[in-house]
Image 1 (cartoon, rainbow, N blue to C red):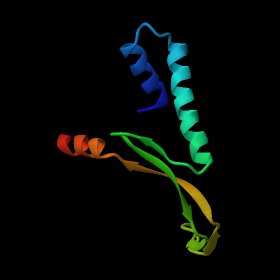
Image 2 (cartoon, rainbow, N blue to C red; image 1 turned 135 degrees about the horizontal axis):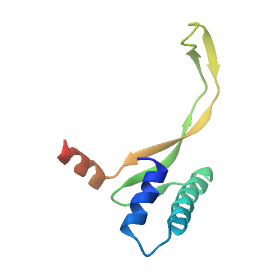
Image 3 (tube, rainbow, N blue to C red; image 1 turned 45 degrees about the vertical axis):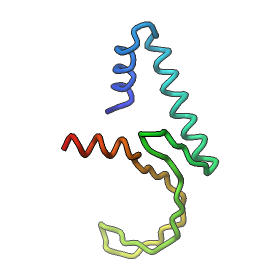
Length: 94
């Protein structure tokens, strides 16, 4: 689902809100999650999942085109772990 599809879906479910209001709500929620992750904190949405930041050490990797060795610097990457309810719902539909 794309961001625009999410906005359309929420707008259809809430016709009393303008499309602009729905866009702002989605933007504020995503920005709040982003800012919290930037601080290194965890965001937990009960039943859905948890966003956190994980540290990756520096390492040597391979350039897939040339096969040559390249250095990959250390970095922090976002990580998402699904919640128990979400996992159960997805598993029951398969």
